Length: 360
Image (cartoon, rainbow, N blue to C red):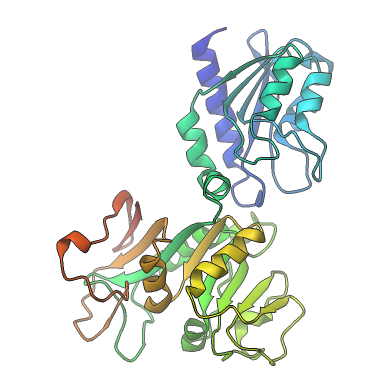
């Protein structure tokens, strides 16, 4: 057992796993490598739901050479039957002698069950190497299973003085074209985009991925969630013109408007903490990475109920003044002890803008 080799091969498995970032949802990103006598004999990554898992691809490539080899994988192999059979059974059948993984799978259908089964079948299992990197790679997946709610990223394009629009609602364009192109990537990496009827009505937003390079990487458009409490929207808005995605319309009253078949209208959510009810519904539907694009009304509610996991700001060096609309929508903070503390996780210049990623 060579620890430096374990580090090296697991790092390679993590690199492979990243290749599925645009297409793997709702599954986690997984890469696998089979090594025997110091040589890689098979490798693969999970590309999309229903396709072979990383371990299966690596084992198929290695063939009979799998016997006596070491499998390196960033996540605990699956234990349950889904669209594909359990990888843990294939590993045992292939007579692999050792499995080295970064971390366990937080999904209760798998959670440490595969590790136990491998050991019971005489296979050595090593865990914990590159653990933090592996958890970060699938952070939303871990968050979903460990916190029983989706991971929420709120995206905002703001001026230097923290404004998202003029007082009359005009906001085109505060940030640069390059920043808006970068947003296409963030959308593509999300499972669902959450917005409001007011946002759609303001600029007839489509909220889709349009960049041709990114479109070639994704299997489908991100699904959409719309909070339309007053049932203001109808099929005339452009957001309903894209049919290869699910759209969930959340309202407090019965919506009698007609929509395409891909639209599900969910009525009577009630008025008490409406946002929390919606997120619980999306959690039950299996969405674990939600990208919020809206005005300050929804943002303030998410702040109020402490539901924001990540704040993604595209900051343009412009001043819009006191009468313009602030991004947080918050009122009533009168003492510094009431402030909301965030941690800067990343800063990246985009043209003349700054992309700032903040977390708790």
